[in-house]
Length: 493
Ligand SMILES: Cc1cc2nc3c(=O)[nH]c(=O)nc-3n(C[C@H](O)[C@H](O)[C@H](O)COP(=O)(O)OP(=O)(O)OC[C@H]3O[C@@H](n4cnc5c(N)ncnc54)[C@H](O)[C@@H]3O)c2cc1C
Image (cartoon, rainbow, N blue to C red; front, side):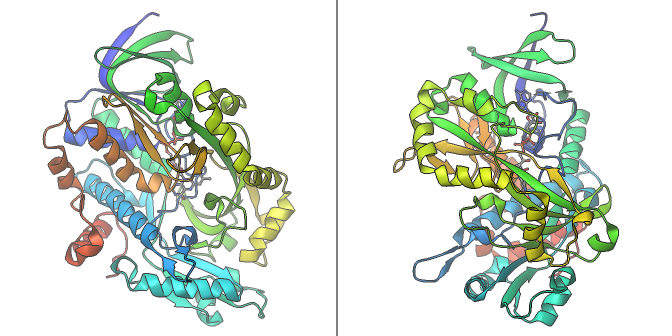
């Protein structure tokens, strides 16, 4: 141990979550000293990297898994409303940061792109129609369009209509105000801003151990380039390790970390960089997940804007590896099983044999079998135009709920110590799109008693905070216009 250092806050991991929390903290309490430790050689290299995720600004404009069909045939849109409201918090913060000059050139991280849902077969067409009828009446989704007309659909997604069988009923919905987001670029911009605010960002530094102190935490950190180990003290620690958050949370030993486990799901995309093809598709088109597939592997054919170029991405195909991070180890899953979560993990593994089997089968798919799935969307797709790329890892939460032992969850959850000295983010869905709402939750859980007038300060940046925008149509309109103007998105209202 050759150095002792101290800051008010340590952020572990340099992904979108730490970047967002650091940015919020510097706005509401600029005097806060912050250090970031990232084990890789740069920021935004794991799930937040642009090619490790799908870059969808999840606003529930196209994702069919956010709206459930009920036993009586009606479609419940509550979850879609909730996700849309959360995404609007993100848009407001990003817009504020651009207006204040904290980050520049929003076009480098956000682009307007129509969001569409696409279904085939009579049963799914009926579902989509009912879903559309339920959604279009709501102020948040009033711009949604629906069509079964093949000529209209050929205008919406020409590539997908070429050589399509005429005898299967098809339908789609479209919302023009969707977005594609380069979360890697956004993360890099936020960290650049934080560096200007005197935040120390140490890449190649891995946090190894936690020791509780009277003031907060003593972290054992290793410099991966020199092999040196040192202790860093902080009053508050945020564990933003992405898939790697669970093992770190377990190392804190806090009671809230008990009986929690993780289940990793990997992803593979098919990518097409051929401009002749990429330039014929301008949308994110989400389909329905296959039977037995986890909700985050809903197939979609997306236009992506990466490094100023248009590419197409299809997938993600889910798969299984025991690693918790793309750069992780095959021992991540086995070593995460501890005496306190053993029964939880066993209960979950018994109940989810079908999912494990499905994921293992997915891993074995050949490129040609994956191309066949793509051809459900784009019948003329040719193998030579597409390459397989490995996406990031998502670690799903396994926990005991009041009604279920070992419940596998597909959302995100903030776990924090009772004294507010440490918080961790587990899970990865809806993910980076709702990073602002999730980090606001961390602030509200751990800083309300430490930062005077926290809510008022946050509301200056995010006017709709604490309000349901759908119930305030004038505010909704005003905020949407302001946000879209400052982020350089086409205003459509
Ligand atoms: C296939 C796929 C598709 C997705 N699609 C979307 C999408 O379309 N829209 C969306 O909004 N979200 C999407 N997501 C989710 C989104 O990518 C994640 O929610 C988000 O990037 C997580 O950010 P993070 O900061 O928590 O983690 P990460 O970006 O993974 O960052 C965590 C960092 O912590 C570091 N770290 C871990 N352990 C340590 C340690 N001990 N010491 C130091 N550093 C450490 C890691 O190296 C890493 O850099 C997708 C994810 C995947 C995998």
